Length: 379
Ligand SMILES: *[C@@H]1O[C@H](CO)[C@@H](O)[C@H](O)[C@H]1NC(C)=O
Ligand SMILES: *[C@@H]1O[C@H](CO)[C@@H](O)[C@H](O)[C@H]1NC(C)=O
Ligand SMILES: *[C@@H]1O[C@H](CO)[C@@H](O)[C@H](O)[C@H]1NC(C)=O
Ligand SMILES: *[C@@H]1O[C@H](CO)[C@@H](O)[C@H](O)[C@H]1NC(C)=O
Ligand SMILES: *[C@@H]1O[C@H](CO)[C@@H](O)[C@H](O)[C@H]1NC(C)=O
Ligand SMILES: *[C@@H]1O[C@H](CO)[C@@H](O)[C@H](O)[C@H]1NC(C)=O
Ligand SMILES: *[C@@H]1O[C@H](CO)[C@@H](O)[C@H](O)[C@H]1NC(C)=O
Ligand SMILES: *[C@@H]1O[C@H](CO)[C@@H](O)[C@H](O)[C@H]1NC(C)=O
Ligand SMILES: *[C@@H]1O[C@H](CO)[C@@H](O)[C@H](O)[C@H]1NC(C)=O
Ligand SMILES: *[C@@H]1O[C@H](CO)[C@@H](O)[C@H](O)[C@H]1NC(C)=O
Ligand SMILES: *[C@@H]1O[C@H](CO)[C@@H](O)[C@H](O)[C@H]1NC(C)=O
Ligand SMILES: *[C@@H]1O[C@H](CO)[C@@H](O)[C@H](O)[C@H]1NC(C)=O
Image (cartoon, rainbow, N blue to C red; front, top):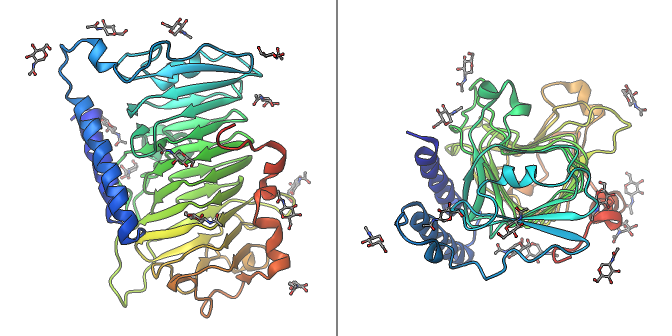
């Protein structure tokens, strides 16, 4: 089967998994289901459209003179996989961006799944990917650690440039779902290695190592992250606000105590690094029996604040990578969380129950210096 055929099935499976997750309340599930059914029908139609139809019909969604002309602060490039505007692939639009442009380039990406591996080099700062919604626009590829020479090279999208923004789009790795114990099956959806990146209303879909939150200061708002083992990992300094974290680890029968998933593997390696992940007003959902984090590097730092935790979180909460010397140096904090998984009675000894003073540096955009660089969604 070609990648398009097999992956569309997987994309459907992922959206179905998204629906069946325990994450959503009954009322929001219904709304989401309507939205997704609508979008899938649209995707389906696009995939089987009548090839002899004229471009006028196919491209009817485009107003005349789209994209609008450049301004002196912004350029707009348009991507549509049916050929209705300048570019049919995201990478070809990225390739057309000028080197070291001080202007922002908005790459407007139409509804659809773009099957390609995309790379934004260090030389192309100030790019925005603008999709049409994270359940209707996606970039997907299927490299694994085995097929790409290592986990760090497996990402479907790699961003090495600074000042990257993504809005209303999903990043997917559609390689086979990694099971615990698999070797070389890690499959990153996106690697973010540039400084000052912002993600609004975005989706991140894979199983093991979904979001390689590698380096720099990053902000995520209203995002959806799906994965199983270490599904947010790296050594960035990031704030996740109002996000949904969905575990697809296999369901574990009541009474069984094995762990089969981990939300974070933050990689702060020394005391002098200002990195760490903060989850603010987020919701954890899905299946499995999982930890909030494990200490990939000795000074790993993660804080969960005002976050809902269901009973899939194991009572001890966290893991020191089975290296007790790390208990002295890791910083794992919890503050005003809720839900059955937030019960702190059985937490590992090194976990900090933060008081107001201790929590204050972590619970607003100043944690990522956002007051200095973060633009509002509609800027
Ligand atoms: C990716 O998809 C292609 C085409 O379907 C397939 O040949 C290849 O084996 C897949 N790679 C992985 C790592 O699954
Ligand atoms: C495809 O469109 C052409 C032109 O509009 C029409 O003649 C033809 O019957 C259509 N075929 C199908 C299978 O709908
Ligand atoms: C950009 O264009 C606006 C309106 O055309 C103009 O007022 C402004 O001075 C320009 N800015 C620069 C930096 O050229
Ligand atoms: C539709 O547009 C594409 C891209 O501009 C072009 O290659 C193709 O020939 C057009 N097809 C028709 C039927 O006009
Ligand atoms: C995009 O297409 C428009 C209209 O066809 C054209 O005027 C413009 O030069 C193209 N831009 C690029 C970057 O190719
Ligand atoms: C463009 O990038 C440079 C370097 O990353 C940055 O200083 C500048 O503020 C950016 N401009 C915009 C419009 O984002
Ligand atoms: C786009 O993202 C914004 C910010 O997260 C969100 O409020 C909005 O509902 C999203 N729009 C669509 C069409 O997904
Ligand atoms: C990755 O490669 C190793 C060594 O060749 C092999 O044992 C393993 O099964 C492969 N993993 C996957 C997921 O294909
Ligand atoms: C918390 O997140 C939910 C949805 O994710 C949102 O509706 C609510 O407004 C957020 N609360 C605050 C204080 O931002
Ligand atoms: C940070 O600490 C590491 C390990 O102790 C050391 O190798 C590195 O030089 C330090 N960097 C700075 C900027 O102090
Ligand atoms: C918060 O905890 C720190 C460290 O244990 C302590 O020094 C401080 O007095 C506490 N602050 C409050 C307001 O309880
Ligand atoms: C974030 O919180 C800190 C500590 O309470 C405070 O000093 C700072 O002004 C706040 N920043 C913003 C942007 O609200």
